[in-house]
Length: 193
Image: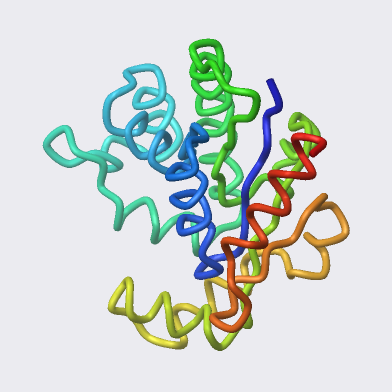
């Protein structure tokens, strides 16, 4: 079984690519969804977050996302602390998920596989990209936020150039090039067709 990492900067459209792969019949593990679920439901993860960020990280048993976001976006070290808690737990969950899959290829959609170094654990990686202005428009619309807020988030992420040097494949989700033929070509190459 090939394990393929699927990533891209905020607003690039990696979730759309993941949905297409899923429609094509390939299992997709969504790391961001798994992380959110574990931060709400996994007692070991919850205890570690409370130890690192205080009891106010949870409000009536629910994750206090604003409290956490305010801290991790203001302090790089705290973001690294949260990543060190959540990412290993999500990786473990991904490996357990892989054990029950019965296809030649599985995909792991994750936001920061290059930044964390986990790209080395995959058989190959796919980077989804889009022009920055388009990414900004998508996120502003999706999250009902400001251009400045989106740019601040983009500036916290690695650049496309830096990521593309590590990626095995690149899919351009620029609303000009069709994505399905690009996906089909990558899948065909992965399968050795």
